[in-house]
Length: 255
Ligand SMILES: [Zn+2]
Image (cartoon, rainbow, N blue to C red):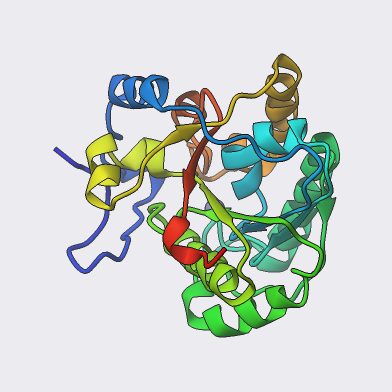
């Protein structure tokens, strides 16, 4: 049974960590990940533009890939994730902290943070055309796009995925999707129903170490911030990201 908090209309009612339903079983994900066939190898010197909705998305979902990649990796986060600690937290302060963590994590991964317009955390879906337009200006010289999977269960991740797909259609660039909350809230059958096939991107031991090191930079997400009793990103989510998984978004690409 699928117990992720997605409403019938496809929107996400993301509950506070304290009251969230139990995630899908680790065993199911582990089996799906183990069975995932290898992804075609990305040319090691290719230039990548990596799209995220929040400052920790690409580290969680694509950090190993970025750590191994030799070509230019430029990253954008379309929000500063300023509302992650609830309405009582100072959004400006949270925003500055998260963007600093983002830059530190990207330095660990050998990727370059790129300044862009940022849209409201939790409200990215209202700005998809503007965001696509802004990113089109960054796509010159890029060989591949990476973005959250369009069905990753968070409204901003879904929006970022659609923005990536729009950019891929507009530029003709190939798009790979990475996962953030999917291994926690969705079952492998949920992916199959959406026509998505998981692929494994083989990564090195060094990438494994740097992935963990990059995640440690996101202290505000991985540790409980009082008065919350749970971190925004539970350890059980990271456990499910035990290898680099990808989805090829072929429908989005003319190339
Ligand atoms: Zn996110």
